[in-house]
Image (tube, rainbow, N blue to C red; front, side):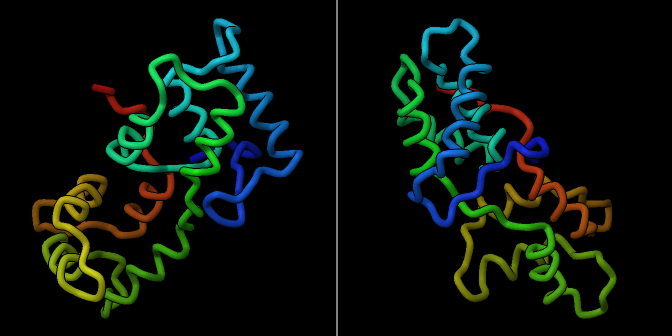
Length: 166
């Protein structure tokens, strides 16, 4: 989860940063640019992207970072990267309501296999690998059950590390 006051919200992906947001990005860009060359390394781009409240999976971030040149990005390049890759954050409350639809007994607990079956077959089916990635974040017990409130919180916090780059 982004540090308090660091999250940047845009109206939609591709939207432009406000003057205040640009200043926040510039201040934090300069702090992260340790060698003061006016560029962020690929890894620093990922760190700053997540610091501003974005929480892609490690795989999603690695895919986004493939477009970053080996020399990294200057300030304008980072602004463009952020705006183009921005996703409206999913709130914990929104995830909880989605889980509760399937929790007919209102226990706060969900069966991992049934959860996977629902997500891969109902509505707009998710690929099995994506569901497996979500379930890796859940604390599934020996009976195959997990607390979906804890999972919603974990998913909204996002990954804590930068993925290894090829």
